Length: 99
Picture 1 (cartoon, rainbow, N blue to C red):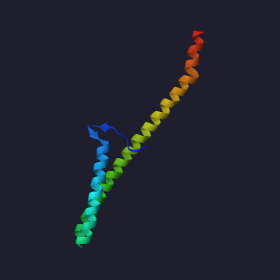
Picture 2 (tube, rainbow, N blue to C red):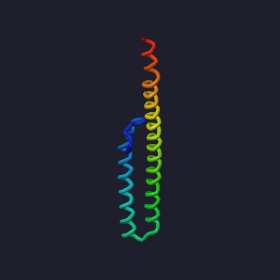
Picture 3 (tube, one colour):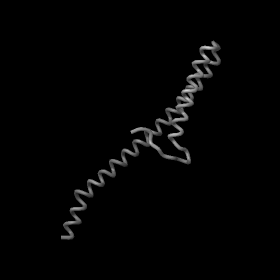
Picture 4 (tube, one colour):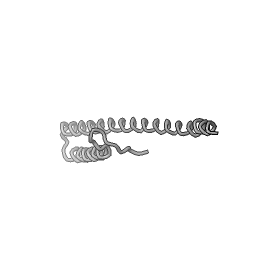
């Protein structure tokens, strides 16, 4: 299904996802280069914590996206069921009343 496009409180969620992914990639590259250039444990730990923090934000964003997908799926099933109900029961009842 992909990532849904919607805005909540003026925040474009697709832009938010792409910015988080870019932030994740930049931090990962910085972490790799910092580990190669510097063997300082504090720098490695700080970069690792930054990366873990970004991973946590991505996880929360993915959970919200999954929740929205589930709500949309339930809504589609409900509207489909309502359409089937109207086609099979409600419309024939109306037609029989007119005759």
